[in-house]
Length: 135
Image 1 (spheres, rainbow, N blue to C red):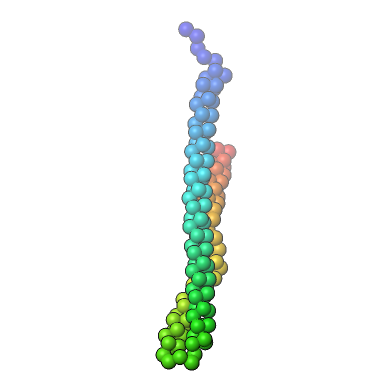
Image 2 (image 1 turned 30 degrees about the vertical axis):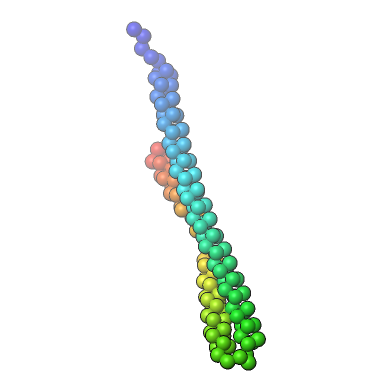
């Protein structure tokens, strides 16, 4: 029976360690990719919300302006003016509320990639600690 020499024993331990390291790196990469996809979906929903508010505001303001024009055109008729005027004011107020909501939401910074960057920083700190422990 022959005994494995020191280099063969080190080689047998080196390959499993290398495979383990590659598996760990792939798992970290997969987790980070899933996190990035999740953040992209959140940003997509944020942009869809912004666009829908903008379209709603534009529609309500347009209807409000049309109603205001009808109010002016019908100013000499009996009580129809009050009804058209009230609805014009309601549409304009609704449109302005959507615009203010849109401005406040657009002013908030995007959260895109924040969680991914925080996780990468944590990974780097952990790798630095392991490097110091092994030194």
